[in-house]
Length: 83
Image (tube, rainbow, N blue to C red; front, side, top):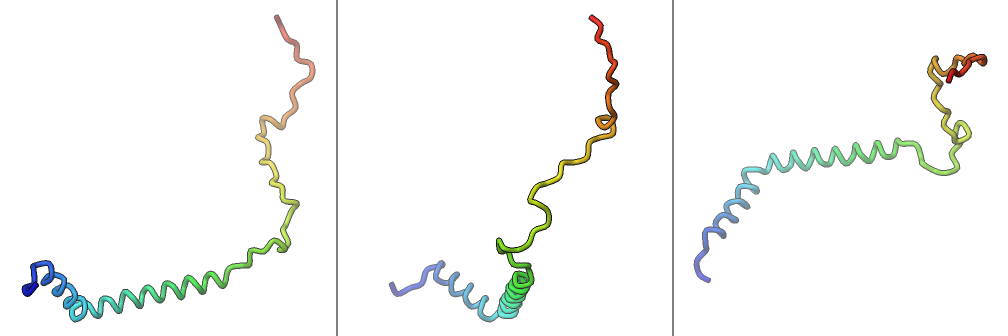
């Protein structure tokens, strides 16, 4: 229990590097994350409310697509079928 193993020294080294060497990087990352959260909250507040009482256009039905030109022409009624 008196000596420190290699794993203990590695953990101490990582903590020291984070505290003294990466301080600027961590604060930059945290600042960017805070800006992202603020932007997200702002855009969520700007969205239109999604309530069921909002007026809707149309009767709730989707119009069918227009028929192609070939289907719109009427077929002649005097076709004869040959057997």
